[in-house]
Amino acid sequence: MNPGKVFLVGAGPGDPGLLTWRAIKLMSSCDVVCYDLLVSPAILSLVPAEKEMMPVGYRGYCGSSIEYGMHPDVVAEALAGKTVLRLKSGDPFIFGRATEECRSLSHHGIDYEIVPGITSALGAAAYAGFPLTSNGMASDVTFVSGHRPSKTLTSWASMGKSSGTLVLYMGAKKLALHAAKLIAEGRDPDTPVALVSSATSYKQKLLTTTLGKVDEVMDADIHSDGSPVLVIMGQVVELSSELDWRSKLLLAGRSVMVPSQHEEMAETLRVIGAEVIRGPGVEMECGFNPFDWNRIMASTTLWLADEDAAKALMATAGEHKMDIRLWPWQISGKRSAQCYLARYGIFIDENEEAPGSSLSLVSSEQDAGLCGCQLNVTAPKFSMGQLDICWVDDSAVMEMILARPDLFNWRYLVTTRPELAQVLRQQGIAHHLVAFDDIGQQLSMLTVEQNRHVA
Ligand SMILES: C[S@@+](CC[C@H](N)C(=O)[O-])C[C@H]1O[C@@H](n2cnc3c(N)ncnc32)[C@H](O)[C@@H]1O
Image: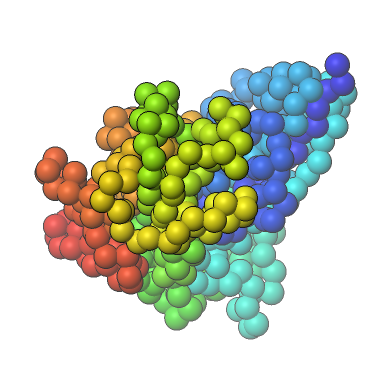
């Protein structure tokens, strides 16, 4: 068997809006997605539900004993002929061990392609509100690994003398050591320093200090929760108080899971600052079970409550190879059902209400009548992380969320469907939210309320 191909793709620092077009396309065209532990749930939620997904990669200074070739699972999948999307945080060619990975693929005769991503330094600076270079302040920027300070020792001397911007990747834990070295090499102790954790995600935190005072922030909680931290030093950091734009957004710092069918609303929420995680995909299967079909066959008048009911009728009649010209029913239905059947040359009367003696066919189990459609939900293959607001508009999704606390950890469960709100109320669960208009405003009120609780 010919091996498949591996795409080493940069996923950017966290915000799914920073993915490249190519990365999104590859999510749909690949066979399997192998992802770094730093790739956020918001990004993983964009991978189509049917794709195979595997966590691979190493996290956080796991020791020099690791052999940094391509992960064996990625090689195995490619050797089995699959197209593998290897999603890496930031950019694969910036401190991404990509050289070793490419060599190991070549060694196995596997073709590869590199798709760049936005490196975390660019994301952190843009979302914390300061540039990396600025006229009169910094005319150069250096990216350096703070992982093994001894190896970069030779360049510390020139970095100490520079007045440009210095970005330390993997350098937060040893920051006090780095700061002492830079000061010893001549860097001004008053140089502003920013620590940015989980850059561009809803969890982003910014802490500022100066080179001479980094000791004072080493105990801050920015170091403690396992989030990736980037250290940026230089005069430009001072601009954050002036240029910050992100923390002013209405839903900044909030993660909202949005039903997959509400893509337009998801975009609105993104614009006002929320990190949007796409809800589990739902698929509607239309058709009638044999028992219900016998009842339908025994009836002379049918009323179709919506397009999906018409779809279910067509699908089941098709399964039974019924000739539409010989259909035994007098059918009427709502306009959407009428339009759907008209596409097949079947013309029915429009009727917004069910006529008295007719058998009603509907699509969802909430309404009275024979239900022709079933929602199939695929559980995500990764944990959704901490969700501030979990917005659900399908009963099947709601059931899954309540049944899988290992995948869904939410503060507020909300819905725009009155019948689901009723269920939430009966179960005494969190909040419901029935008005769809101006949902952004409503969600922000919810989070303000949450702040009050915290206070
Ligand atoms: C192994 S390097 C990978 C860098 C990645 N290839 C890139 O281009 O951003 C991991 C380090 O990158 C930085 N990093 C990656 N993602 C980050 C994020 N979202 N926020 C802050 N720092 C991040 C941290 O310094 C972390 O220790």
